[in-house]
Length: 331
Image (cartoon, rainbow, N blue to C red; front, side, top):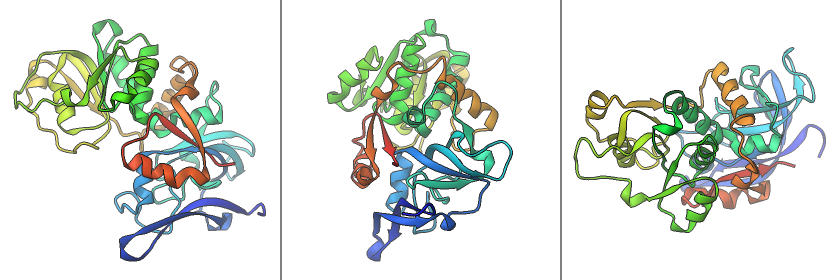
């Protein structure tokens, strides 16, 4: 390979609505225009990446395409004063990996306003242990900790073995919260307890279908990653003046709920949009994740794979079998 040629996972449309993915050589000249060219050292695997890799047009409109909504590496070229060659940086969210060539390639080129300087206290790899999932968890934790103190009662994390959920469990436990973790995977109870969960709630018990508008208050707050009936049950089970932050709809985008939890208990529901988070909040969340919220032995939340392993792991996450975070080394 020359300095202008690099490897990337490329997804191509094929016959019969199929999509093929393989590692190909690409040219830097093929990348979209942008202020900052980044040599990617690490990325991470998210559910949105897997959707892009199977041709989901709600995520990616045009193919061939390189997914990867996360990237961490060093600046190779910069047109702006704020970044210079060799600076360690990361990019999460915005349009990266959706309709802009993403972090599953060894180079990305993006607008300067998408780029975050690597926070002091994190390595490039550690930043991708967090990635979009960890950053999303961090936003939820920001909203929760502003309104709910550890002594207010236990907090609930749904989808706890996933990327967002596992980071949320670990960070909230570090901050002194009593964490109840929802999962349908009994084999992962030891994993969840190992990262800080004090209580395991079976997924079947987390969804109330009685139709009652309110349930017994149990949770001072919650971070929900799944939506649907589980989110509705969580809200109906939240204690007065509690806060629920939500970021997912893998169970359902529907919310079967009345207004009673909000007007009789003062429960607050806050949505998390990590893709378009304003830069001032984005930088604050990253500083927290790198500093006071940083989990000891953070890499225990993840496993590392190579580019050659990506396709198989995309199948794993689509089946709902991914545990914790998957870091992709682009070396």
